[in-house]
Image (cartoon, rainbow, N blue to C red; front, side):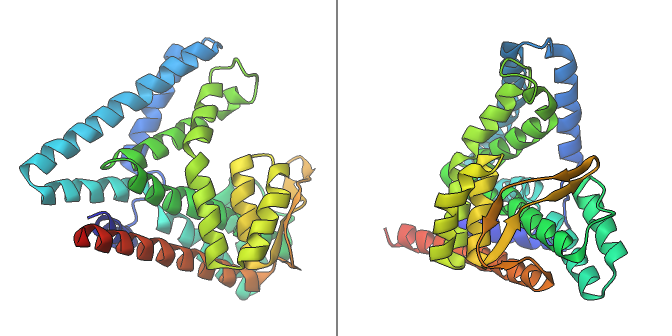
Length: 307
């Protein structure tokens, strides 16, 4: 039922996107803000307590509903899985933004491409050229395809029922919400949230990197992963971007314009500089990777039925 749950959730999300900030997500973020106001005393152990209070009740409720429905009918349990996947995935969330920027660059509308990238990244991109916009868009596409599609699939396969997708999404949201505290000091309130997401994302990030390598240029992807990923600021993101860049044969990283000027980053990948053509190659890589995962799950389903 894992494969059918994913396919149905993907089709449902294509028909009616839930968005990265659907009502359930917004409700949880409000809950997280309330916990932060109550628990944040600048001490790490209070951050640990807040994270547990935020995540564990939701996991218990999600698992309880699943097993209750499954005991009534496996079909109801399957439907609950589809609902959870629909709420935690976000293929259209990043694919629509990616496609809009690609179309703007193809039409030569640099102002529109800058505006779309600014809305997606959340920071100004008024001085970015077409090559820089293409490079940043590819990076965002690779990272978001991992966080909103492939990591959810992996967690759904690894953990029972809908617990994996819920745990991953909640951990990612809390890490993002409390990141400013995590950057201050190891004893800060949000430090545990960042570390917890790092641990939870360890297997999904490497699984996505492997699948990018299989779906693209395997040799270059593995080389870039081994030689370049460790130099990136966020190691998990570095693994995904290095593998994706190697699989595509494109160079990512390097300088990035921020509101206060240039922000220099390590270079990732091999081959040519990013341009508009590589945007379409990125779309192809993401779709091939998705098909790869669905085929793998199909083989697992067939093996299960045969057993």
